[in-house]
Length: 425
Image 1 (cartoon, rainbow, N blue to C red):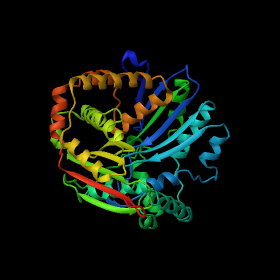
Image 2: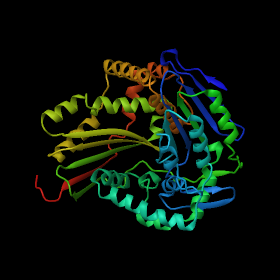
Image 3: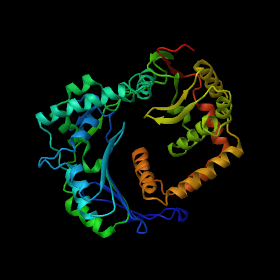
Image 4: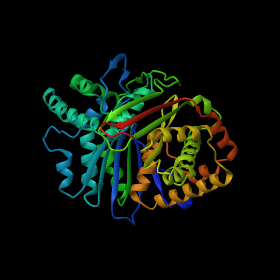
């Protein structure tokens, strides 16, 4: 296996090998820990609804990737993964986002048996007309539950108002009407297209024997690389927002504001994609984060009671999201917009941010969960592992930071405001 050359300060060793069938495996033994963490994933998420499989054009409803993830937990022998893993006190789960699906196992014993079962059940889809119909009711109830949650529904609404064509505008789980359309054939088409080993990865971190792991993987990973030609058909997203402002009445006590600032990725063409995410996240944190001057001012003036912010990356677009709860939402919107026009990062702030990122990276690499998160996060964002993150942090410069700030489309904003139904402000 190839040993990835991580920086000494991180104290981790990762071995990588691409198997003959195309599966990419990453093994990071941490023998001084008590647990292990396995992640078996595919670069397939909710946005891949229109694709070519060999010479056949296929369109599936929104929510199919999430539905497929649910159905992978139903086995032909009626022994589901949750029941199997619970016998050894092992946790298992799965998650689907816009670009990937991951199947997760976390335990402290029965490593060989648990790895064997993970590979077997992910490699053995079992879809029937009856079990697909049965699942529809469960997922529709899940969707309705999230629709009734204001914090979830405000996120759905801002995406509809931000994106014209890209499937990031749709919820990962889809809508009830989408779920009604999903068929067994849709699930098998998506499985055959995207659960192909050359589109998948397996990451194992923690207390395990690397030779035993490799032997299990090579013996049991019988999923064939069918050498199929798969091409996802994406619609190019334009930079403008769909709607600049929308206000709704909801069953809440405190008004909520969610704002999206949308920029065409070509505007950042001088910065590589690895550094660009770092720059944008630093800008968000320094200008809007809990330690920012704006946050301090807004909380002291009782304008802001809760907030978060994050960055989202599409093929063509970078979007900054700013969320806040406030008894004076219009003032909060005004303050956010004023700050967007006046974004800044000083040399001192950049240096402090770099120190914090380096310390966080070193600390994270002392934990099984942290190393797993780092490797899997890199794979799902970049389809490669960043082995020298500390060097990457040190390469950030104020001149490049200023270029990124200047390149953000500060006028291209969509705002959603939720107001309480029965309370006047």
